[in-house]
Image (cartoon, chains in turn yellow, green):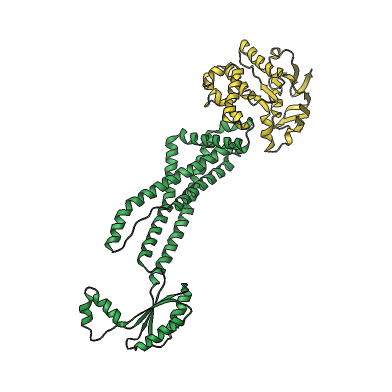
Length: 217
Length: 300
């Protein structure tokens, strides 16, 4: 499903964030990406939807080299990937429902179908009762759940979550991990970058250390 | 098709909401566009009505008047009429005898006394000619030819004034067009700047939409609709301004025309002109938005 082939990423003025990454993630796998702060976890994840481009090697998603995709093909790739951002990137001038409706509008769903799917996604993460609330009125855990709802509402094949449990209490972190696990159980390929790998029992653990893959198993 | 229509509808709704979200700013921008468009539209309206007024009082077709010598015998006039009837360049002609001219002028108030002081009829026979070809060159050629005929003393081009006015109004219409072109650049600048501000305001939304897989078309669509909508509303304001001015001017100008013995109704922009005004405003609005997006979306 996802393959990294000798992938390197260098930021100016010559800082190597990733070096010679070889990694293959199969369809429907749950992979937890661990490592210290600055190990390159977020960079690795951002290469999959081509938010960033590798400086060497290639990243293949469903056989497509994402670094070679054109301006028209890139949005199509991104629509098949759900991404929970580290900083969530919620739109704070829109309520929870409208935040979840945005990807559906991008997908081109009819308003009625979009509304049905958005409410189903909010229900899945336990936020249906708060659909009219602005993100600012939601707690940290609720904001994270809203970000997950927005990421999964388009029913992506791949779900990526970058530090989804950071700054959350244990109970809320458990809750988030449970929700992500549920998507894995229905066949979605899930990649999670986190310090809290204990929350994802049964997952394949991959560890990055100063941009290099140290452990994959 | 259905997906495309839904996308357009959503973009239009978003464009309306962006117009509505800052009502004062939007109203001022629309007012500026309305004023910018009202200037050429008003100029066009004035030229059009002045043209109608003149065409209603001056001869519509050019005419030549052939004056024979005062002492010319009727047989000489007959000979001229015979030449005209056989001439291929003449559409119609009308003979006016010196007696008819005298009788007509004597019927006019104040002229009888003047004419009675004269010992003889001072007028000559005349023939009014409407040429087949109305081009200035053809009329001049016919006039030159007629001047060479026996006993023809003078040839007058009666449509000279009308032609001059026609040229003046043609220049007026071109001036209105140039003014419209110049002010369209102003409208372009207003839309360009409005969209620039919109892009800055919606920066977070655009960034998130791109991360979620929005295409450039998806992102640009509501802004382009906004440009169209802004142009349409500005055009509508310009139309209202010109219609209002036309309504205010209609009665005093009709009264003025009546005082000069003419019938005149000041006409507002007709349906075709209104559609053209709105279409131009929308096109320029769309173009301004497209240029602004090209400049500012790529920078995002």
